[in-house]
Length: 182
Image 1: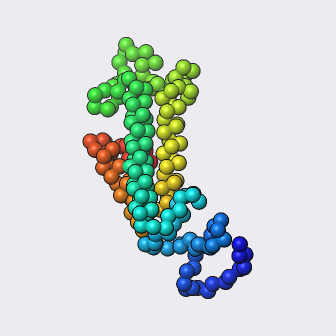
Image 2: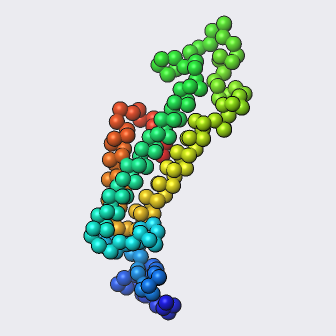
Image 3: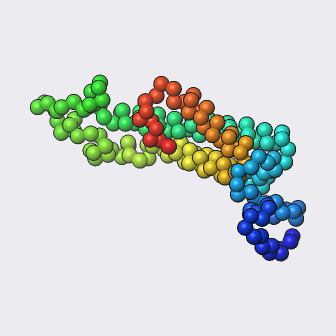
């Protein structure tokens, strides 16, 4: 492997980060948007050098973008469902009912302010599912970010279009208060 230090001045052709591979060749990681077909995507074993490889990778990234939006929707769905079950005193219009003289203190104070029953604490199935969904959402979103950071225009387009198509399908008929779940 060649370990010589090469100094490149500003505006030098091919400026970028040098990345050695196992075959002894150096591949420059382009730090600007480009339309190339030679990329290493996320892992060393995910190397592409052909148009068919690029197209297949674009399809995978597109599906990952849709999957990301699906996870986000599922996590928000779990959160809304949990919120709805926590507030039994909320009326049909979404405004808490005023307490009456016959209400006990437990009926007036929202469930999340009351002492939590250990059976319904942090180790319940709903919270564990929400945590796993959040972990998966963060992992997929960071992987999509790293794919975008290849600066390959085609892969960037696949990330954006996959996320947009996922949003289109998973957000239909949903209230805008689900937007905070990102």
